Image (tube, rainbow, N blue to C red; front, side, top):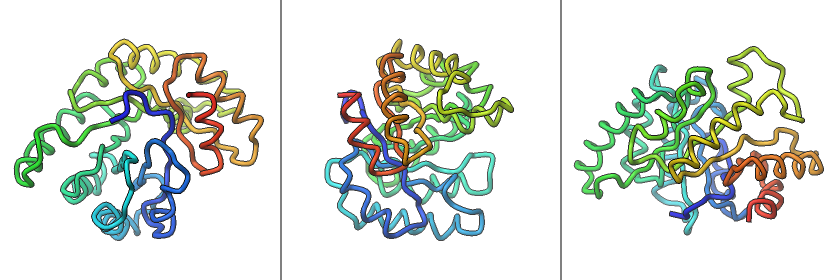
Length: 235
């Protein structure tokens, strides 16, 4: 595992082409997304597709992370049960709470035993995207030794608060600060929210500069063209 991950690249879990092509952009981590990028009626087929990708595709030395569905949904436990057996680097946990992390940890202990994996082989990355998670972010990041860092999802967070999301990001200044402090205090990755306008590279540079100066160790990308810029600012 890299001590600090500069970039994670989100790709849709229901797109065979994206799953296959993702490594060419040289991100430090690839997130195979079973949650936001996949419609409810496609969840089961996407789960199987991601399982096959983990088993048969060569992701080289890239950290492969799978964003599962929330445990509160009809899909979360199914995601863990199937995907964890293929030993991804980590599971990304949406709508995270310390209680959910503990529940997932227990499930992984059993799966690792059944599959003959070392204890703690599968890591966890909580997503900070609710008011509750922001309030208790430090408790969340210390809730399991599997946790390697936290990911701030500003789109989800501002929706939870009913705030308007802007490119300038003044509305997430407090959230960014809390996530950085919690992660840095524990020596963990602090992964900033993606810049959503994939054609605005000047805006991306400004956003990277701001996030790096606030103490984030890396940033999420939703387009492969963003990764070089992210690496330039977080190297």
